[in-house]
Image (cartoon, rainbow, N blue to C red; front, side, top):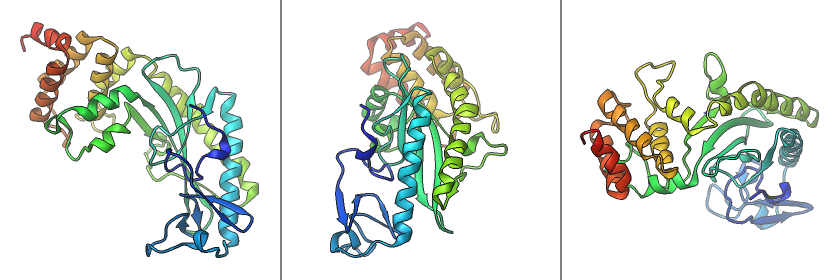
Length: 297
């Protein structure tokens, strides 16, 4: 559900309630940056300034102001593109906006701005665009461990994405560490323009290429342009389960059959893991098992 701008932690960490700390005339929330320390915690495990009544540096006050001004301006700019402030698709990162015009019942599309302190001063802003299905995540997280990708935890699966792309990956060559740094209030307008340019030029076309199950099924079979042999195993598994959620068992079975017969796997995946994934889905969904049986499995 959309939530008011003022009721979200500055850095977007956490969604189960907001914990505020009063320091003088400034109200901080757990996760806010206070002179390099997050509100509610300290590197030593003791009380930080917000809990002891200590002074907040002028730099920290400016950083908080910059983030607040950027968020408000970005929300206005995205509203005309039918994106609204929302609960985070990934509660560990980012300040999220979802596409309110999205009509797919099982999929949510959104963009996120993340904030960190730049090493040379000011606030560094990063961006992501993603599509997610809570139901897909629930199913993936409940599958047996042997069917998961290497180092893939249940916690990760519960907040994972069908597909996601950082703004830096739209660069040529890609630069995953891409950020835009603001150090003064006067920089906020240009930062919002930078973010919106990425939305208009890259994120919206990226989403339009993924706005149907058919398009996602095609993408699931498409190797990375920078690694022709590499099929994304996370995207493929998510699309298979999305087909099942939408009761398209034949498409799900066909995609798994193609992947197994291809017999080329990302280092995180293997034939054994894929066969375990296939077996787990067959046990859970008789219609899927029947489709796999028609293919001689």
